[in-house]
Length: 398
Length: 53
Image (cartoon, rainbow over all chains, first blue to last red; front, side):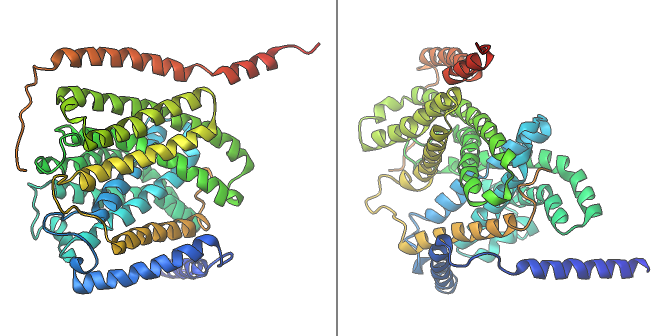
């Protein structure tokens, strides 16, 4: 048999295998399906109106409030939660800490899907979505804009994460030679990905540097890129703990018994990292509080709201993480991770939506259509994650 | 409400130095706190090391 015949037969085998794997598995009537299917259908109908009749037909966005829930939550917050991917790959592949090797695959998959869906949600929010390719193809590079950096980094980082995850796909398709080749690319992709991540996590913060007069002074700072970067570390770690807790219940049958015990040690390590990073982040905030004399702004509604975010959802979960690590209290770690996640959502929404043009008489509130589309994006991501996890060797040790 | 405020970087320097020094001291304490095993672990360790009677 010549090379062409071998390639054709192998291609046919992989194609048939893929078609076979596309078929649904397990029960259809699960609580998640019952809730998510109507949301996805409603979201698709809303998106039809959005693309046919424009943003104004389904959103409360205006010239005064051009960025709403889709940017504030899907893009700015979602990308922060994907930060766990670069943190864990750095610890495993660069620091050579093998303790976390068993969660690398699922973390990279989560990161990849978060970028594909949440950064992909950017398309929904562009008035002329077909212009999204301009920074890439050079029709109008716009390299004076932070968005130029962010768009290129999103694209390159998605490719880097796909390369990091690709050995799992090759292993699933039983392409051993391809898997070996792709595995050899992993370290390079990881280092490239970490560099990109650090830059665009802070780049997302830099997007708001030009909006100084519009953001409340308690949330605006010249150091906002640094704050976005540092907070993305503990956002990612908290999200890994949260998602891992759910995965260990939902996909229990896919994870070996030994891994459950090992996972407790991993959670303690992640919580320790989150506590230290939150402590650093809190001191950054305290330093800015003094440097910019923010105490003059603290005695009104916005001041109390700021304290709720910084003390209630940063300092308190930081202490909870530290206390829980010291006393090996996994339940408290899970509660602290949820609080840290809420804190990140609050911070990103404060910067991009809530405290944005805080002085305006008519403030922006998301329409129900915006909320449904956001829930649709999350639901579809979970569907894809479930499809991949139940078929590919994601929970198996590499 | 379109305005800019300029911060005098020397005005709050003293407080910032104090804050940074306290951060360094507290950071060392936090890392030490997280590195030492907690009460439950110590008790468990002592129990397991005690020979049976």
